[in-house]
Amino acid sequence: MLSQVMLGILLTLFILLTISGNVLVCLAVCASRRLRCLTNCFIVSLAVTDLLLGLLVLPFSALLQLNDEWPLGPAFCNFYISMDVMLCTASILTLLAISVDRYLAVTMPLRYASLVLPWRVAVAMASVWTISVAVSFLPIQMGWNTVNGTVQNQGPWAPERKCRFELNRPYVLTDSLLTFYLPLVAMCWTYLRILRIARTQAKRIISARPTCITSYKSRNNPSTSTTVVSSVTAVALREHKATVTLAAVIGAFVVCWLPYFILFTVLGLKEHPDPSTVPEYPIVMWLGYANSALNPILYGAINRDFRSAYTHLLRCRCPTYSGWMSRQPSPTVTTGKAVKGLKCAARDQLTEVTLLCGHTPSTCRAGQTEQNLMLQEMNSRTATATIQFANGTAVTDVNGNERSC
Image 1: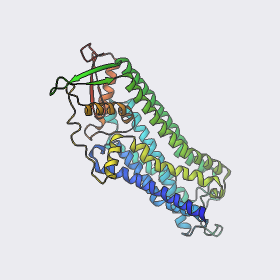
Image 2: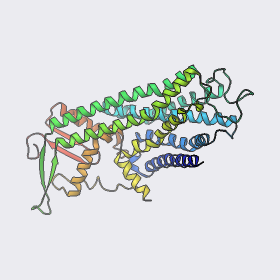
Image 3: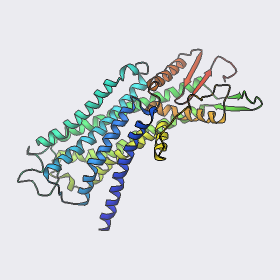
Image 4: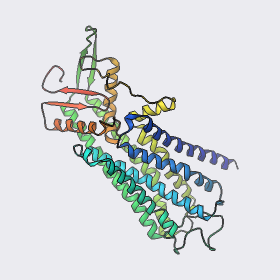
């Protein structure tokens, strides 16, 4: 009894964490104008999917985990299993859509604004939900997932007060390939390509901007000066942070879902009559659910604007970003706070441009395009290279003037 009580408390806390985290993502985008970006439509779609999973699926999964009998009847059991399959599939495919969106933003910066249009984003999200319904409600309600072709949990031969998810070979192979293995390969390929481009850009920045120290004198007090260090180390740190972030994204997805789909495939090929009776099945199932609790952290908190919005919402204040961009100092007037802001922007720029968009709606896609244009100018050895960061602007003159190395 004590172990059941402890398990119930842990599952309840897990469900509350999943719900609250994804609600926080939705509120952050609604409350902050800086987060109302076309790219963030995928983030909101992912948060809504995981939120529905926490509200409509996880409580009944916890009920099955704590109680061997199903008290809600066979019809609702099939509905619950269909919702489970549909929402988990939609969550995985939305992660795939995010990776494709980021891949296009990095590899095709000049064409990104013309490729990723609102109607195409809507079509992509509609396709995600269509595929999710096609592999969940349709086969389960039609009996295509069972060995004998009948609807599971219904009929005189079905065990009473049980909720079983029956599997056959064609359904398991189709579902696992379409909703996990192929998206996993695609995500790994896109993020590896993004990582390679990030490293290439870092090397270009290093070759074009060796270590230098620049002193700025204040107009109000010429006797004082502020020193800004623009070094190879900062570029290396940005590149390292992007590597770690991408590894966390892929690692969390693989760790959460790969064990479940391996067991799901094995049991389906054996046509196991009741996978829930296998001791490992509940463990890997809840491990897959854990990805929905991690998504608000991985796809929200890695972005500085999301973190700021989270902080304001948790403090019960409306997120505001008033005036930071307008107060950006000129190169000749640099305060300690502005220098800190430039350093923070330099540290976070590579990760945020690579993974998420955190600009105002009018500059959301333009910021990424401009940065890649500047990197291309560096690569072609033009006279002047301008590198724009997410929340600050640093201008480097490479013509041998006073500010160059």
